Length: 190
Image (cartoon, rainbow, N blue to C red; front, side, top):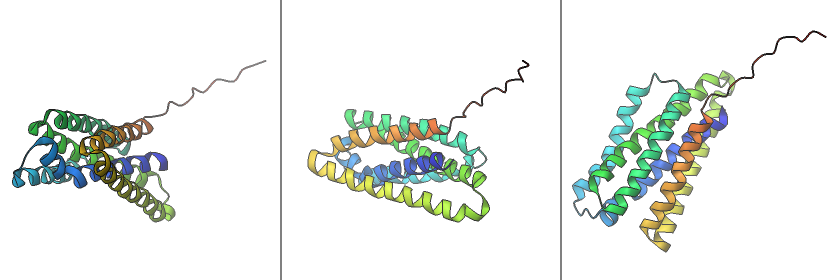
């Protein structure tokens, strides 16, 4: 459970790092929007959808939320790549909204799953470790994408970041898939 939860929270956090650290630059440089209100709305949409998704998904089992979050996040990142390559503001707005939903589902699913399985006496330490890994992943991602954007350009940073983060999100979703239990064999008489 710990690996699944950590992967989900880290994937959500790095998705947030991409959208929040580079979102306004993507809107300005890659989409071509010079309207500050529109560019700010993209970031606000991410945050608003994150909150709304958390409210509506709070009753989902943790593993299901992680699975859905991984797929939604990967879809959002594919749309982000499309939006950047086509300079399509509507696709970017949809990518931002889906990124917020993916972030929320991954994070909520991770916390729900670990709270259901961590022993009470170890829950605080377990949650602290998960948050630490998530924050480190988020910070490292923001720094790495910023360095890549500075060295090779924003488009390259988005291509590398979106591909890597989509792989992380889908990896977390795969970890949350149920593992089939071996069928119990009856006793063999000899």
